[in-house]
Image (cartoon, rainbow, N blue to C red):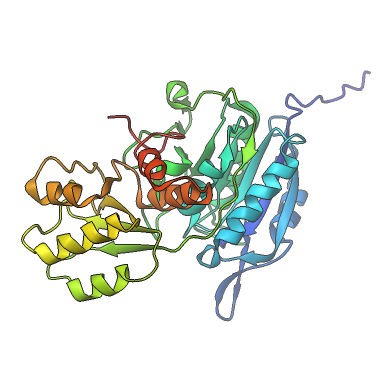
Length: 346
């Protein structure tokens, strides 16, 4: 008889950053709350996580674990710094995260991790791992598998059989397991019985060397238009010392053009150095300010186009570019350029 040693087909090593969220939660008197050590204890006792097709992994757990509604820019910087510190030691990174602000974190890290040449996959769950019926197990396993087996050089969200580009993803459902989608860009992969990876859509391996750009908190605001909105409230908002404003407009980037006072407020704010981005309220499609007179008025006032970017991507891209301390003109130009797959080239 021979003792056959089982050789793992994959000796890749992945770092899991557990930031908290539903995936780490256990039911308490006040509802679900993240519990320290729980995910790691479950994973360490399940033979599945020692399967030869999965990579080796280490877990770094945040203290305190966060519900993602409590995420701040400091937390983005912490994740970025942890990835940068371990960058040479690991072949990829999985971030366990709450779903509520996952799209913001994914977009932020996509910009912060410059020249990323390893997979960073963010996942979580709608039902905690502690429940007998959960979506957590598949999400963790598939995120690890993707890190080990696929040529991914970008930040992605993996959730419920779909892999989407991090800065293209949005949370689209509060209750369904299919919680994330990519409104203006195809899925990077669909992982059902067959694995359908769209290789031609993945970002190419960068030529430059990896660099972390941390975020410096900036004073930004969003203002969503609606019929009959108060121009006085808008005026009081833009009198704040804002660096940037995301104006959520109708359709292809339209706003009222029959109120000269409103347009003049926008013009004065732009002239004073505020960067105002025109972002459509529509789930799909893009801003085209030259399509209607109601959009052209915003262009004339000095707004820049958010094109087909998600609100989350626009917010994080603006934070990122302002953190790089570029001139306003350069920021405006870069906002309309594709940096890491966040924007469709017109």
